[in-house]
Length: 250
Length: 157
Image 1 (cartoon, each protein chain N blue to C red):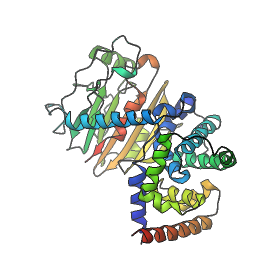
Image 2 (image 1 turned 90 degrees about the horizontal axis):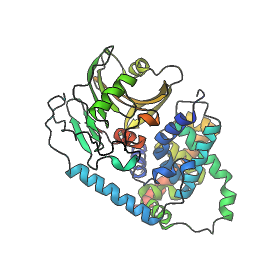
Image 3 (image 1 turned 60 degrees about the vertical axis):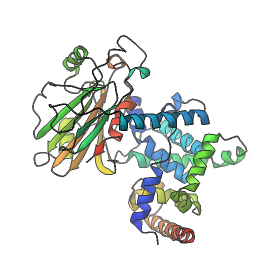
Image 4 (image 1 turned 90 degrees about the vertical axis):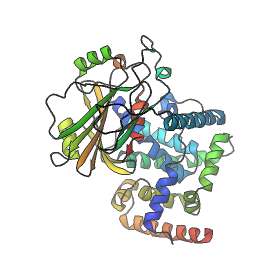
């Protein structure tokens, strides 16, 4: 007997485990020759190394500013790539996990990112906002400049917001954020939980946001992709997407 | 979907790529075909974005499957071509998986419908609309596919 639910479970579990081709082959015009076995093997080893580093390399939590006890102290902003126009190799090798069990998520941030301490308050204040944290790969001075230029969601930063669901729902929040005319929405899943995905443009910046109703809270994950000139060295969009994909929901 | 820029389309496509690629891999059983047809779907969307914006994964999936059908003849002609060890390894991996066993005895259309429902989460109405078949045909195809999968599972247990 193959009950419906178990078929779905087998499909989800096993197909999600299938390896993907290298990212640079996804979009046709960036497509290289077919990946040879060696490249696949190297990729697998690299992923394994990252996982090991993620599991064993996490530093202890000392960040009192985080609402969720267990947030991990961030890597200091790296200046190693300052002035470099080579993007990919500059991010630090150690990802950092920020734990927010109180708010129901664990987030893995690439090594070159850090959590912005004393982030500027969102103006105007968002109704029902319980908690907000922003991660950036920019050093403090560049971060201040990008905030001044782009506002509360500078391109190439990653933002997590938690709202009181009694005040605002996920879809209402999407609308309030700017997902109106021209916004593309899809129903998706993050870690097997339903989420509303929204993409829209705002002044030359493409904003991607994910809205999840979770109990009495609404969890929002956001990042923006902006002009090349605003991109911090070492940051790639796939880094931001990976943060979404690897979030742990507690 | 409203007119969108190539950059936004590329972003949306990248976001859906993992799920749709894996779905195509399950149906077509070959990583090269899955990638080729999904890239074709990307190019088609670049020229003419999908009319619906509610399930982009579903749109990419169906367009890619259509492409796969069209290229079937070419594939037969090229069937003697060399495949990389990585491709072979993924095919063997799929064969070893329970899902590979369940899908092995199904026709390509049955696999397409089964994967659309159980992996991409499309309902009967969406599958019918997107694959251009009647809802009754979807139900019948699924029933036949489930019967075969059940038989396969019992044989394996």
